[in-house]
Image (cartoon, rainbow, N blue to C red; front, side):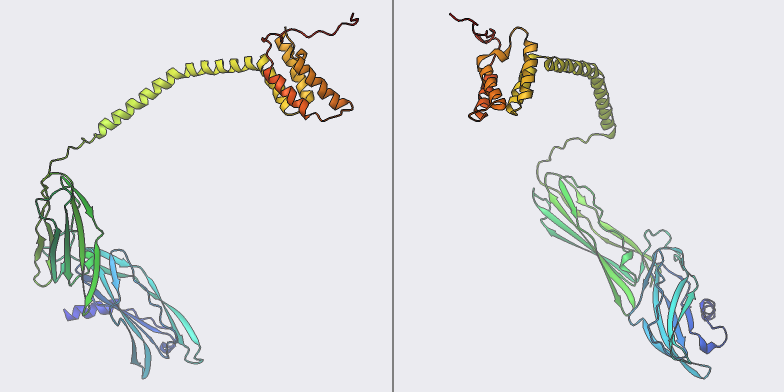
Length: 419
C-alpha cells in the first residue's frame, strides 16, 4: 500500500525547471494525496513553490474549481517554507487544498496557471513567471454495499431530530402546527444532505414551507454541518391526514454499513366540518370549452360582418345627406359668424338659401339688419364698433327658422312712389 501511494505521488508530482540553470527559475511541485476517494470525503492537493531568492509578491494560486467538486482551503492552508537545494537554501510557500467529489464519477480539473513573482538573483528586480499546471483527474467511487443509495451520503454520523410546536390533534379551525426537522452530519459536507420535508397537500390544511437553512462546520479539519427545514400547517376545515415520516439512508464510514436515520410522522386531524370544494376542471374539459368559445366567436363574426357592412353604408349615406342639407349650411353660417368672418358668413348664407329654395334667411329682418350694420361698420365710416352687430347676428341666426310664421315670407322692397 505504501509503495503504491509513493508511486501515485511520483506520477502526479509536476516539477517545473528552467532552460539552463535550475537556480534561475522557480520550482513548482503539485502533489495529490490520492486520485480516488468516496464521494463526500476530501482528499488533499498540495502546491509547493520554491525560488532561489525571495518572493516580493504573494503567489497567485489557481482555484481548481470544477463541476460537482467542492474545493476548500482548510485552516492555515498557506504556509512559508524553505528547502536546501544544491547547497543553497530556497524559500517559498506551500498551499493545501481539500477537494471533495460530491457525487460518484470521474472528474477532470482543467489545466491551470500559477503566477510567481520572485527576485532576480543578479539584479534583485522582480521577475514574473507564469507556470502551467497540468489537468488533474479525481474519481469518486462507491464502496461495496452502497450502490443503491440515492443520494449517496458517506459520513461518520448522521442524525435526524424533530420538533413539533403549536396545537395538538385534533386541530380546530385556525389552529397551526409547526414541524421542524434537523439533519446533522459529521465527517461529511452538509451540502450532501437532501431535502427532508416534502410539501404534500393535507385535507383541511394549508401548507406553508420555509426556506431550508444550511450550516457548514469544520472540527479539527473534519467537515460537518446541519440542514434545518420547517413547515407550518394551518387548519381551515375538517379533514383527516398526517405529515409523513422522514427517513434518510447513509453509509457509515466507520462500520462500512448502510444505516438509516428517521423521525416519525405528525398527526394533523382537523375536528371541523369538511369544506365542500369545487371540483377541479379537467384539462380535456378546458380544451373543449376553449374550442366551443372559438367556434361561437367565429359564427358571430361571420354573421355580424354583413350587418356591419350595411351599417357602414347607411352611416356614410346619412353623413352625405347631412352634408348636402340646409341644416349643415345653417351650421356653417353660425360657425362663421362666431369666428367673426363676414365673407365666410355671407358665403354660408348663400349656400343656406340655395338649399332652402323657397325661403331666404338673408331676407329675415333681424339677419338683414345685422348684416347691413356689419357692412356699414366694415366698409363705411362707422360711428361705433361692430361687436354688438355680431352678437345681434348670432342671436338672429340662432332663432331663425324657415318654418316659423313671418320668417318664410320674402321681405319686399318699399314702394318706389309712396303715396
